[in-house]
Image 1 (cartoon, helix red, strand yellow):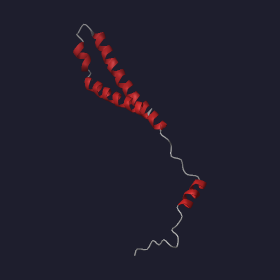
Image 2 (image 1 turned 180 degrees about the vertical axis):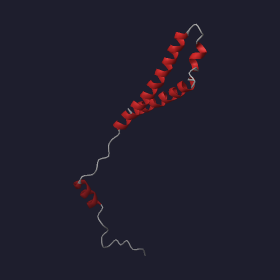
Image 3 (image 1 turned 90 degrees about the vertical axis):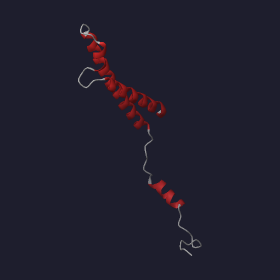
Image 4 (image 1 turned 120 degrees about the vertical axis):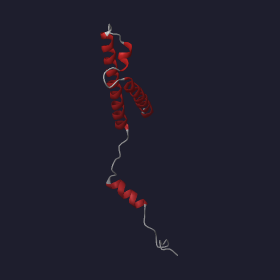
Length: 102
């Protein structure tokens, strides 16, 4: 599941980059290349489509990131019993085993 969501994020990020490059910061962008003075409605629809596509791709990235984060296993704090078992397994060195260097 994480792999699929990661791929979705990567594809959406690439598409978002391309869509942003298509836009013109002054409002012209791709729509001004395709629209003639008699097709003002077509230009407006192209701008709206690119704007909606930008926000949709950004939303897909955010939603997928949140879902991946929620699917990650949570770290549980060990209970007292588990901590005692862990400590008992790590028993100190016996009298025959010294930690002193020779």
